[in-house]
Amino acid sequence: MDTLFNTKFEGEPATHTQPGVQLRSNTYDLQESNVGLKLTIVSTVGFGDQINKEDSYKPIVEFIDAQFEAYLQEELKIRRVLHTYHDSRIHACLYFIAPTGHSLKSLDLVTMKKLDSKVNIIPIIAKSDAISKSELTKFKIKITSELVSNGVQIYQFPTDDESVAEINGTMNAHLPFAVIGSTEELKIGNKMMKARQYPWGTVQVENEAHCDFVKLREMLIRVNMEDLREQTHTRHYELYRRCKLEEMGFKDTDPDSKPFSLQETYEAKRNEFLGELQKKEEEMRQMFVQRVKEKEAELKEAEKELHEKFDRLKKLHQDEKKKLEDKKKSLDDEVNAFKQRKTAAELLQSQGSQAGGSQTLKRDKEKKNFF
Image 1 (cartoon, rainbow, N blue to C red):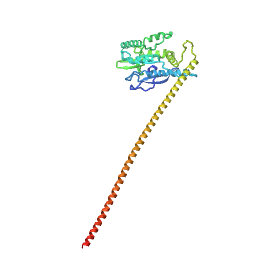
Image 2 (cartoon, rainbow, N blue to C red; image 1 turned 30 degrees about the vertical axis):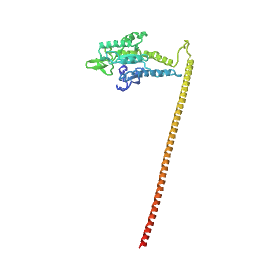
Image 3 (cartoon, helix red, strand yellow; image 1 turned 120 degrees about the vertical axis):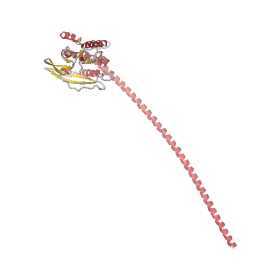
Image 4 (cartoon, one colour; image 1 turned 90 degrees about the vertical axis):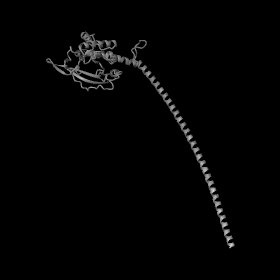
């Protein structure tokens, strides 16, 4: 991009360890002579770096649709300011293809197939100095054949305008463009030119015998820039707008092929929406009532279990209390019986002691009389 617009775009290089595909958008105001250009470059950071590449195209499609949606919302406003609105729609997709010399990757075919109805795709063979001229020619033929056989619609330079029909027709035959990029300038002859220096020679970026960079710049910036914008608006955006409005229920004609009234369509959609809203409210109310009933049943069941547990504990307490009372009574009876036995034993002992004393006195008296 630096080589294409002959400037230095600020930006940090991205690593190839991203967990997913991220789109990085940067807008620049370029000035050349008295011509100004507001350029937005969107990089697909991490594209193709994951092990599972199945959904790699989805963030790109979502980003393009988001720009279409923003433009549609601006277009549907009552007070539109489209003449000052910054159009962020993607007008061209430079799809870089690895210079393998064999065939397109399945990821490339799937992604371009998903994008061809949303953006103008211009396929480009990157680092084309990595393969020989003969291999490059065969590779171009192979890519074109695979795109056609898989039904991928790439952007074709328009040939309906006589002023550019000849050059555009010639350039269409050169697709996909094989390009080389370099911001380094080397002295070749008496001129400073952008080139890449190798041990075996020098590859000039702007030499059409070396690569198609000049062709790409001519077609993209100088000849077909307005057509790219027009194609985006009349083809890709219109398709998105039509599908979106049909999804919302708007149509050009009714089943009787009569023109649709916007007011009638709005009222019908409003009534339909209100009906669905009431239906949803009723469903939510029924669901709420059902949940309240279920909660009440759960609480009643819990209350019943608590009462049953209380009754069990109360009965258990009463049984334990009765056992303790019975045991206490039994102990009291034993204590009373023991006291009675003790009293009887003490009485017998006392009586025995008195009887023994009387016998001793009687023997003492008898002894005295005897003497």
